[in-house]
Length: 230
Length: 230
DNA sequence: CAGTGGTCTAGACCACGGT
DNA sequence: CCGTGGTCTAGACCACTGT
Image (tube, rainbow over all chains, first blue to last red):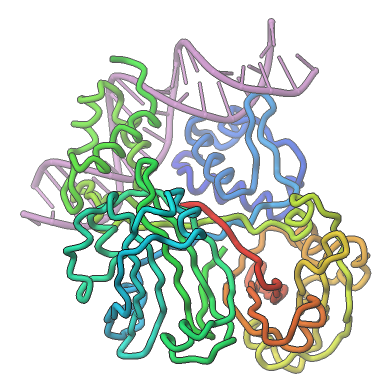
């Protein structure tokens, strides 16, 4: 009767959902009622239900009550780790290899993505990320020098641009686009694969306080997988 | 001095992190101390900090205190919606078109993924998801009939297999793999594109109470993007 | 306008895990 | 051991929104 944790209540309620005791689309009892049933404080029930709502199983509205969702939302999530960590967690040795470094005005596509003037020169870097000497990913990056001044002096042969940026300009925001793309001659050469091969790509723009810092596109060789659990 | 919400406190602390007032790797003051500073209850601070921990900015341990993470973890998340919803949200008309339906023993690859005996026959479905008559995705699906008996009688020309399964076998677990793959002749024909084109793929296995229900691979035509925000 | 969830509080006990 | 976060409680007020 007594020791009821918000977790145990959450699981209890989840069971009622999965077992069909409470049906999709229906309204659940109010927090007060559930609290009385479990013999605990309302705030404990509140926390349990907040969790289930965040999971996408139920929907809560003031006055309207808590409703079981018709179609539970499946929310996939995963950590975007550093490529260095990605490589090292496979037990390989990481080495970023800068194959191009120039300061030039960006192509229109990049300028638009970073919402910058096309005329402003940016730092352009192409990097091959090696895992024990094998190409693990190819990176095409543009950096807004004004937003990260120290970048020009960074030891980019030892630490990747990304890691440097994260350390120096942490807590930025960003958007991410996953897609597939046929390898062009440039990517194929960098990844030691063939033009036309299907590459997995991650395209990312990052800003900090409304100032765009960097745009980066990562190309992964055929066979690369991004895994997660629901 | 008074009205302090857990959200406002969360933002205040986030600002201290981004502004460098509290440095990566350092230990933050305890909850009691922060509560005193803001003049609010400890539980309010607790909730704020719990949120920041979930975001991946800080790390909390009993006795050890709350530490600012060296490398903030960027966590991407997005909802895996139904293809029907995906299509309809673009303003197109959705139509699932079943192009193959058979009950056969699965290839080894599928049997392994579903942890089933290769000899057991499964329902195999190939579906082209049309968005206003244009192919939006191609789906290759295997269903464990034992785990979803009613599937054989479902009106799959009107409702997609996925939607049927979600309605009948809700709240299952699953894993997801994103990747890229060159189109084979079969996918190319279904998607009205060319063999060799880079396709974005989502490979998913789903189970319910340790029983594998379905394995599905979705192929998206060139240009398809999966977007999210950090 | 009334009922539901959202939130805050002050206080208490506990579990973990560094020292 | 003992300080820190983790959690629960009982009660209160509030904000939103369906009727």
